[in-house]
Image 1 (cartoon, rainbow, N blue to C red):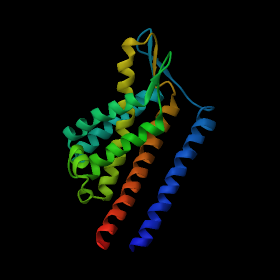
Image 2 (cartoon, rainbow, N blue to C red):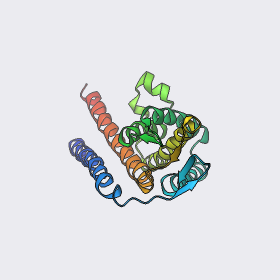
Image 3 (cartoon, rainbow, N blue to C red):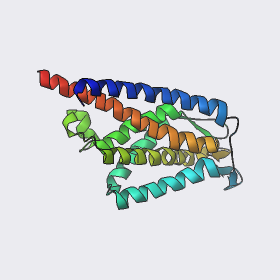
Image 4 (tube, one colour):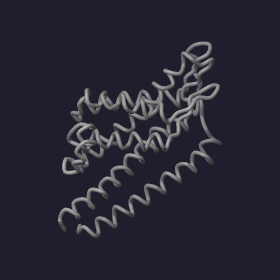
Length: 217
């Protein structure tokens, strides 16, 4: 594929991914909010956790971590190191109400998608990338893309769960995963991988512009 065709393809895919965010948000507002499913489990008198909104996403995330480390040779140390940053991002893009912690899903997932992209595609540390902006150390491979999707899928629900737990001691009541199946579907299965795809395409587009500029200079 020549450069011009590749750039057109990247732009088209970026537009389709952006439309996907809008469509999923409509799905959340019109369908899942009406036909949502919840199953509340009492932890204490004042703290409950939802089976669909928290237990299932958390369980899947833990299995993904095991799979990444054992079968895809992902460094657990590197994973956990950047996971701390995803928790900070979850705090930034969250607010509390009387019964739960509300997360701004799209902003949060886009932010961790940039983080996950650097964790999986960049052959170096985050500080090195910020300092040197060395796009030549990016490796756009299918394996890295799959690793990025799986990492984002696990980062999103686990980060939000930890933020919920951080707020629990200072809350009168707390319902973790209060959005039920909407939490499980929108946060993990849809928004996180979609955000990662969008960020990957966006950086690939920038990378193409950068390398093309180098060639002509």
